[in-house]
Amino acid sequence: MSGHGDAQPMTSAKSGPLKGTAAVPGDKSISHRALIFGAMAVGETRITGLLEGQDVLDTARAMRAFGAEVTQHGPGAWSVHGVGVGGFSEPADVIDCGNSGTGVRLIMGTMATTAMTATFTGDASLRKRPMGRVTDPLSLFGAEAYGRKGGRLPMTVVGAANPVPVRYALPVASAQVKSAVLLAGLNAPGETVVIEREPTRDHSERMLLGFGAELSVEKTSEGHVITLQGRPELRPQTVAVPRDPSSAAFPTCAALIVEGSDILVPGVSQNLTRNGLYLTLSEMGAEIEFQNPRTEGGEPVADLRVRFSDNMKGIEVPPERAPSMIDEYPILSVVAAFASGRTVMRGVKELRVKESDRIDAMARGLEACGVRIEEDEDTLIVHGLGAGGMPGGATCATHLDHRIAMSFLVAGMASKAPISVDDASPIVTSFPIFEGLMNGLGASIRRGAAQNL
Image 1 (cartoon, rainbow, N blue to C red):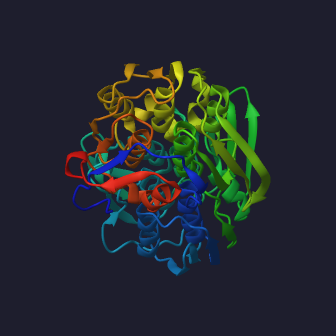
Image 2: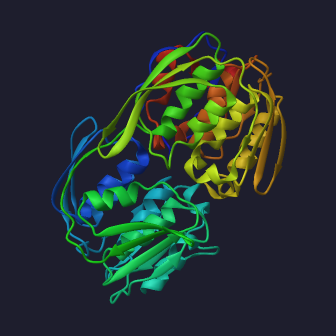
Image 3: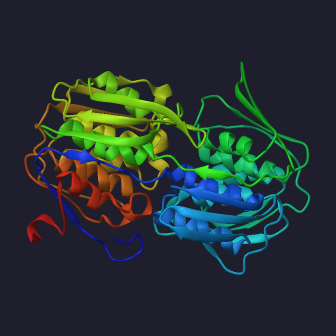
């Protein structure tokens, strides 16, 4: 599959029990950051378990363009010879970040306080996404950004020649924006302060500390106050990337809704800023055991034992949980369709500015599959049909969004009639082994539209 080539229709039909071990890829968020922080350190950073999806490969290529030496030594094994904080060279060509909002926003932050100019673009999906939420705070450091109407790519960023530290309160809960500001603050003198009212994934803070930055986090009446001392010399590290909880969500949720399933998903990150889906599934009555808890690469991990759960109930998902599961609402809405009663997801307006408008994409696709949906700007409500109750039989539009594609393919494993997606090619951006892994567990996913199989 190719995230940048021709459309690749795919169809998922009702599956027998899923069995076996689902070894999902490394965490995408940590993989991006390992490459970027390695490029800003002085010396060689070694990385194991790196996700080799297209999004991360695009970030690796970008780090090379900025002057770092990035080398693959084997599956998941990479090294980065960094150039130090403020040591980036001006790239000779446009930086293409493909489908990755995380990649482009973090890289913009990294170069925004160095005297250079870089132009960024991406695929059709990324070019629709707003960049103002990042370029606005970066302008406070002295950077300038020139893009298309609405602050969209392609966009040229002119780094600040004489950056100043900033104090910035996040207007929305976004780990991407927080991380971009912290990365910019690395090459600004003095203290850069970021305030977040609601905690978001904290991989950047953990990794900054691991690479030797001086950083503190304080809980105050304003929220979490993160203070970073600028212009450190980052030390190279050995980074072991844990398995991605967002990727693990797909085999986990498939096993919950496919009758007779019993699988193991080993080594999944249990970072408290990323585990909202698993808390929610447990509250719905899902049979998930968290086995062998341990720490790997500075992150808590566990092995998940997941069994078919035919008595799941719809619940109200607390809106304050949204930052810890923002990427998992599409697959949660599929599980909700196989639960009994209403599942209410509030505080999810951030989904409307992801790779696609994920609320609209899931609502329209689930309705086409026979599920009753309610929605507004900030809410998605799924009226569950119980185990095995989804009619299916539709072709769902993915809007170049990998999570939409995978969610509907999972739905097809338990629906009465097969479900097709119009384009599964974006899956390669985050979970390149999805098709083979799911079929290896017992799924029936085939390339092509249903009528052509």
